[in-house]
Length: 315
Image 1 (spheres, rainbow, N blue to C red):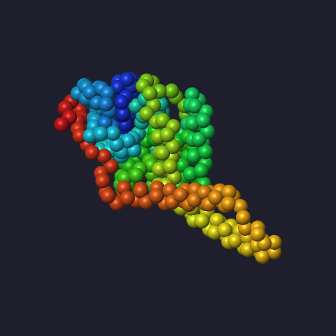
Image 2 (image 1 turned 90 degrees about the vertical axis):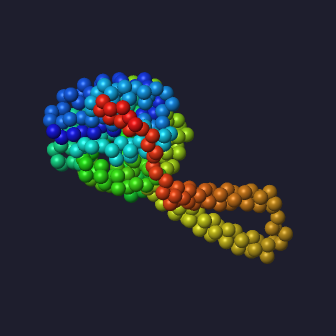
Image 3 (image 1 turned 45 degrees about the vertical axis):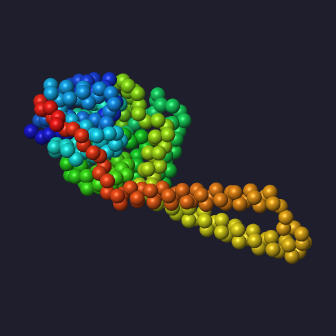
């Protein structure tokens, strides 16, 4: 039988693991001609998440798990899961049930038909989300799609089901600074989008604060666009032209009327403004340099502490 690997990143999700498995396994039991393996990736949880996953793995033959030595982030967890998935297809799902398992049969049939290599889920609303967070999220998608040649669909979730060919292509991109929404799009392949409404968490609390989401958005822009560098260059050129025109103006005014080159307060304001623009541009360069620095060190994306599966205890 064909095999479907379901990759489930987990970080401090002790209240949702059992609920997720019960709900998802009930849906997967209805899939014809398909075996299912669950690959839970514990991202250095500090609660009982790993303990619960271990117990589940001893009880259920189709459950495997990985555990990191510390928290490396969801991106690393997804990569580790894809790297160790054995299935003909692989699906990535959140353990909090915000990715409805009921969509799995539709996603599988879409990919199984051969017309598409990936079936992905996008939210068509953001009901229940703070308004300011929703507003910034929509602005982010519009901004990155204008700045990058890699299209990222508004409302796209990590919940998707992919063929083995697409998974192998993603794994070839072994970059340290990962932005999976962009990577999924960059590798290409034919993708069908399945729409769903926003679903509340089944338990626990979101680990994504506004600040973390902002940093994640900046990582995405830097990873898939060099437009900020171009903006910094254009700003430098524009201010050089403005400064040249201003110098000509001051010289002409001094020659015609004399004694008109005063105004220290305004001069200080101009200097501070230009210094701020320079620091902003240097900051943009610094972000790209920092990402390059992390890449050239060739550190592993994650460090594995424990792995187990089936009825065997992890080592």
